[in-house]
Amino acid sequence: MPRPRVNNQLTTSQVARQLGMSVGRVVSWVERGALPPPSFIDNNGVRYFDQEWLRKAKEVVKVKGAILSK
Image: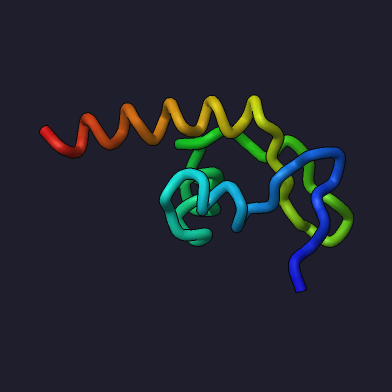
């Protein structure tokens, strides 16, 4: 069952869908520092991302895609 949004925040699977990436890739990029850290992590370790995080992440993905396509 999907978790509800917390204060209009998105879960990892929701941002992965928005970025066109797998959940595993989003987590990996966050852990390696390629994407910013989550906006909030709850007591169960669930990561939440706000719209500003998503905007920044889309910029990173766009730049990385341009670099990789060269």
